[in-house]
Image 1 (cartoon, rainbow, N blue to C red):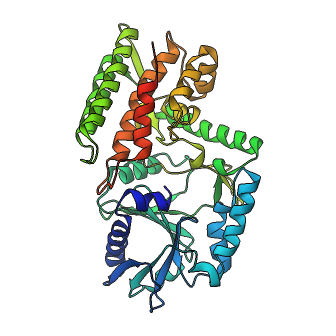
Image 2 (cartoon, one colour; image 1 turned 180 degrees about the horizontal axis):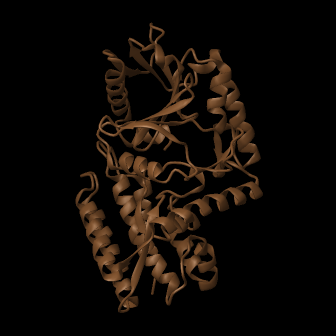
Image 3 (tube, one colour; image 1 turned 120 degrees about the horizontal axis):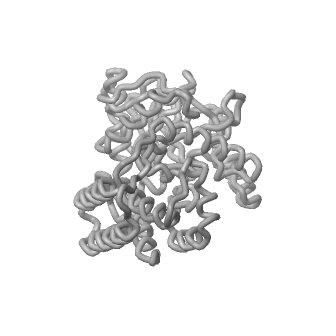
Length: 401
């Protein structure tokens, strides 16, 4: 998640300071303070915060190193946007303009020596430290956030080493961190080369298919329906207080409608094919290596992995559901042609059944609703998440009769 969105969504500055302080104290016996400020500190032991580059970095960082760290921002499928963003990177990393184009200074007093070679990338539920000296990444669970995400990520990646993501070197779940291989790649949503995008997508799908085949299990349709409904109801009860009762009722009504459609297509002996999903299978999390590597694709951000209906990842990708604006229209379009609908998700190993498209949509939307509810339930949420609200509104616009 972009830094500007995090600062708007949650008390990120406080979360960042607590998280990093805890790690420094436990690993380096550090005792000090971390504070964010608008004015330039008198001391030299500070980090710069650039919201556009999505980076927090030492003000003394070598220009060439910083250019490599910021290079992803310089890529965009649109030629004009790409040129503008490349110009921004070029000037933003220069020593005279670094401070001018930064939003905050993060003072760390005293500054541990190791931090001089750290670049920090904020995230939705974790903070990633790129350790340039050791060429590895330290991932910290954000203080107060759901620890299950990190636990599930580590477990799945240690159990299935063939998954095309960075290798995990060591971890400490109790302390809330792990260290992984540093990889360098470009996400598909920043590329304009259709052939490379197609090949990388197919490679990522093939890797996921292997995972599905190893973790697949069938669940009685009635039991699955009851389980997902209960999980959603529990998640609604845990929503931050900032969400009004009217929104909770809107969610409840949507669940009732989806379940009523499922009841209509239910047949005796019907089963739901479930498998371990990635959970956030989208172009931003599929990377093409930019340095020599035996792997031809990376699949990152596994913190949302969970056992779901086998077609969940395929539908997240096909419907672009992580961008909820216009989701209802995309669902209707997908439903309009049964054969094309099946071809778009056939890669996940799904067999075509009676009422295929509606069966897939009903189950997927319930799973994705649960995803959204869990994702927006974070400590210190300052205001309702726009993406979540848009998703709920789009859900009410979907006509499944």
